[in-house]
Length: 286
Figure 1 (cartoon, rainbow, N blue to C red):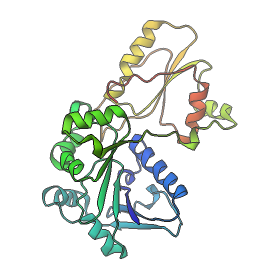
Figure 2 (cartoon, rainbow, N blue to C red):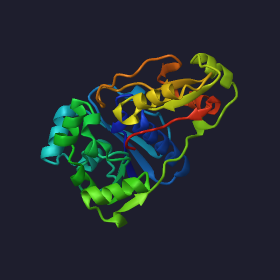
Figure 3 (cartoon, rainbow, N blue to C red):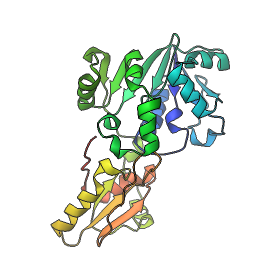
Figure 4 (spheres, rainbow, N blue to C red):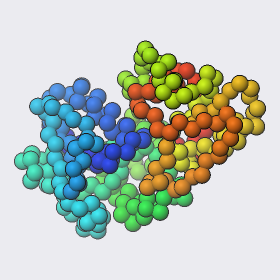
């Protein structure tokens, strides 16, 4: 069997939830599956090779179509053309049996069966959390209901997301499979965590928030609550960065004992979490 794995979510080199999920899932699939052929699909007229995981395996083929993205997306949205599985066959001579999308996006297909992963429907229920560009994408370019209806199978990362899909889009529950996200190997604590703490100049006692900084993550209300608590000898460390291309602008609160450390490398996260006195995650919708 030939499986086309959609790498369009990671083409731009951003690292957040979906990108991390995409990379880790692909890595684990290739470790476990030696029999099936994997076609790693992207579409970009720019050189994006540095943003893609590099696999030198007999059962892995890279295919990149070089159609200008804006023109490509308009064609996919309005005409449902070109069929991506046919493009892949034209490029490498092999037609995929399955096309696997790690998030919903425009993917018209000919004969291949589509599997789509849905993390949540925040963009549907809270469009104000997203940038103007993202709102245009979700409203005018991405017909998510069509993509879900055309999917042979939908993977939801939680029971809540499954129920939300059923409630919002009236999707048959038999079509939705819940597969919870696992923890990556990089989250196993390694020696030398003291060096990581020095790297980020962390205090001895701290609570940790770790996520993209955007309205949904409720960062400012968490900071307000932390200030009101007046916990002695404790700092609040906020790890993560903003992505204004996707999410709406979010002005964060500054203050005493509030420490922003910005983007955290994947291999550093285990030490940050392990050494924290508590992990705080008060998302408004997840």
